[in-house]
Length: 345
Image 1 (cartoon, rainbow, N blue to C red):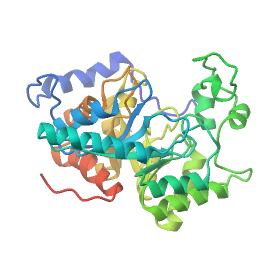
Image 2 (image 1 turned 90 degrees about the horizontal axis):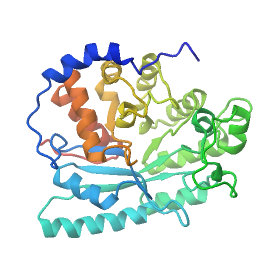
Image 3 (image 1 turned 30 degrees about the horizontal axis):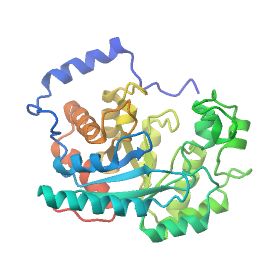
Image 4 (image 1 turned 180 degrees about the vertical axis):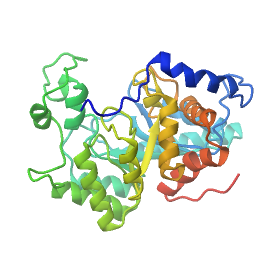
């Protein structure tokens, strides 16, 4: 894999592009704690589960900042009965009560559902139940995908109940990662029929499909199926992350097949360290009409998601995206994926 491009540019090289950019980017004075520059935006990948940012506090700030909506990939507890659409209904009701008292236009919160998020094998019955509940998006396997376990390891308690809390493994050999995690292809390299059926159910429901931490062969197989059934609400998260690791040519190929590339603040954060100039170059090559920007935030090591939306859109604007292109990625494309209409501000 050494021939894959390294998009985390060394500091001495990065400063040559970043310093001129930061010096000329002057969108206006920032008055904390207000978050400017995010009006009408959607964050289509946000975390607010246990130990992370508070979902209601975030929704209030997003409303005060005139955003449109947030898709909560995780929310509250992911143990016990995992019914995120019910949690989001309660969240929207609490937000509406607050908004009426404060005379603020509330955002809309949307529920995401991960088919293995509760660390149980996926089930068509549970997927259909959650689709009926009103989820807006579905993630294929993520943290417990074999690709994740092979790349960064995982919490040992996911497969060993006797492990100490917080004990984290080293990256697992591929065979062991497949044994302990999820992999969507069969021995012949074809998409397993159960995963094909999940994708067909998601397409029939008209909700957004995120490919999770799928390997490249899985991504190609998913793209083939989506082509066959004419489904155009598929999203690949953080294409520069070590789990996905797409080249610009691969991104262009997938975009040409109707798949949306969702770039995230997580990629730009110090924890992954992707060069924002290279993210800008990738989006410029792929075309903003095929891309979205989101936070993928929630971890206490990140800024909150509203600030992450300001930062990632600000970076892209500073490097050269105009206001219409930012709106395309942060408002129009998310609205298209979510099957909602938005009026031009």
